Length: 137
Image (cartoon, rainbow, N blue to C red; front, side, top):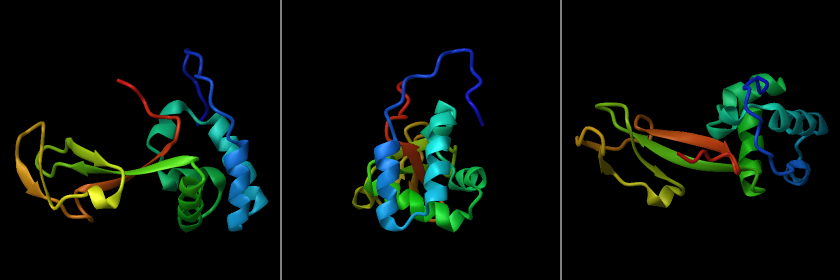
């Protein structure tokens, strides 16, 4: 999806260096070129919370391949990876953490005030974003 807003897009940092460094992990040139193009053309919102399935479709590769490339891209500082805990009662985002060691077994939702046990396969959502794409409120 191309940037279609009437507002000018913020200047993005040059991604050529980090994208090129992905070659050391065996990422094929064709995927590197497609990823660089995607990062240049994607709307800022697309880069805030990246859906690996969407990127796979945009790059024309399978999701498994994209997840590998994105893991390498985290190592190279191209993407950030974090985890969001969502409340099973109201769906609100209860907390975000940036390393797995910061996860907790229980949370209290700041929105509905309900306490709940946190299960990795239910309440935790993995979130990828372009390192410079954080949106300030």
